[in-house]
Image (cartoon, rainbow, N blue to C red; front, side):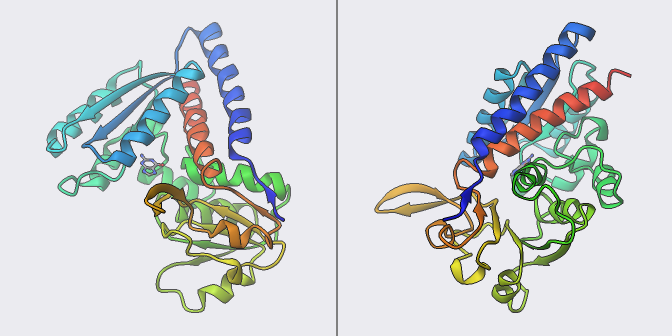
Length: 286
Ligand code: GUN
């Protein structure tokens, strides 16, 4: 049976470090790291994510300001709010929860955020910095995955890694971080041929496709490490249940190490968001 990589326990460790950084910033410099979270519309999953982010922020002493905007909010109104947050010296981090309603231009909104406050690491300047190995604010989910991977592989150099999924939020930045650690990275996606055999050759599989139980035991080399980024709501016997992109029951007996869903990557994402917020606050001191 695979070693379980416990995201709850690891994220608590990261959060303790964040809490002591926050204490230091308050004590030494009199600043309270502050995160503004912008949510547009009533998507239930986004509401849960935002609630969790705000709750965890408060637990580590980070001040959070939630802006909940109506689903019909215009681009102009959203841009104006971003502008105000950019110019507010009390706000150190800005997060706009994605996806946005379809009438809003996500790229325009992300590009409007001050890169120094872009705690998601989605701004083109931060994306470019990561791609060229000068990472500044790194996207939270891939950052959390790297911390989890280092638990099992203190040295990632030379590992064959397949990243399943090519999103801007997870797949692409994940590949960049792995490459920086000298991994041999293959990006697989919905058009990839022989995806199953590609994965079966990998030392590490990172599943970020957004498809429930896509990956089963036939895809995994015995002893491989499996990081499951998926959070999919499925119905089991009429009850709503969260499941990953990996069929945990089938894969866990043959993998070397695996992350559970829930309790795996999810809590790490939030911990890294709060770590980015303190980092951004520190940098804005200068
Ligand atoms: N939606 C899903 N994941 C994320 C994330 O990491 N950041 C933001 N802003 N929205 C998301």
